[in-house]
Image (tube, rainbow, N blue to C red; front, top):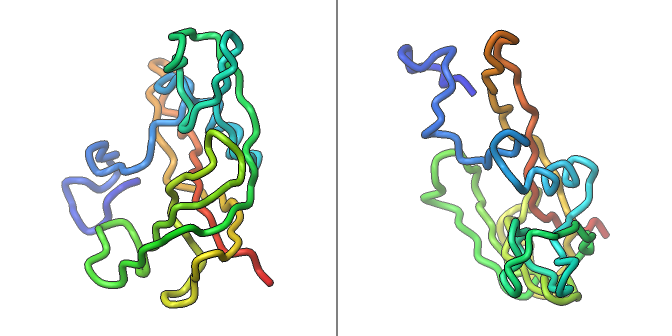
Length: 165
């Protein structure tokens, strides 16, 4: 994730400019969520003690404070409830249009989630449109392994995209 054009940052990893989560096992207790995304599965956590399913994935159950959690699959398709499109003034690192939507997955407790919509031109999306999970690569994360050197950890993130009709 070198920043080209800024000589002092070339061939360096500017961690303060990295807008993606640290997905590696070494840095994140929710690393399994990202491994599931790499397989094209949207998942969340379910408490094995009290049965609560939480979104987003947790490391501790918000109901009984147990750490005894497992990952459970969520639907990869949903329907748009409401959305916003940002065409001008899009933040650095994003492309126009920047579309965010509340998506109804149809199952509790993650019945409604907020997500980006990708692969969709401005003015096309409508309420009630069906969308599907879209997993995309983000810049790799350099991990210093000491004597083993620096290893690049591949990363992905998710959004939703309109279902092709």
